[in-house]
Image (cartoon, rainbow, N blue to C red; front, side, top):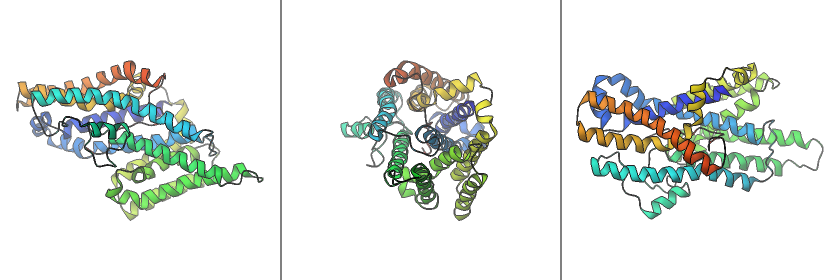
Length: 359
């Protein structure tokens, strides 16, 4: 699906640019040259994470319940596989982050550079619990991996409930399973949009983000050419109602992304859009870019600032170098680490596109 690749490619690059603009020291020297541009990257580019959340729900519905009926025979096995595909590349990337952060601290200490890790801190990251336990992250945005895992687990749990409580021994069980599975995802999505997502205290939990994820899942189900249009209209109205109650730019972006995917699927554009090699490549390596870009940027920033402190031109070149090095480092990590650790020809996050929403 080239459209998914293009969405991931664009969103992942916006996240890299967000972190380059938000975290110093290079941006401190360069921002005065283009204050509006840097302010936009700092304040708004991070909302691109909503595209990843929607794509994640879209692909989860496609793989776990393509027709609305869950096909999951071994939930525990799927959950373990999901954890392995997410966590193993993350742990490898954290080794790189720890090493590059140590280099950056030695060259030019800065508040944006993570401190040396503690054993409990590493364990919390390995278990994807660092934010739940309120433990400092070892790299920017690693919380999203935990959120992605929680969202997948929540969706899988809802599907298990749908199969268990649909009375499979009675006639019409398939229809009941479908209605219950889709209904549970939609109901929890509404609870998130109108409740959890409006309470910042929930932002370490998947429930805070489930609204966008559910919009993506509904985009897959209701974007089917044979699906009644009223269900897609109901999805749009639910999103608009959530915005009317509490306007959030992140929800507006998620709704737009979900409706775009649904309409592209219904029209056939999703499957027939011409594939762009660059977008396909950047989309394929997006998880690896996400994992390694921050330590790469931190290390290059420390070296450039040490050599050219406060020099706008030199630091502007440093920002461009960090951006290019993030993409190159992500490509190398994807080829030599991610694919080998996951034993797959696909990206480790094949049904999602992890990227950080907040600094």
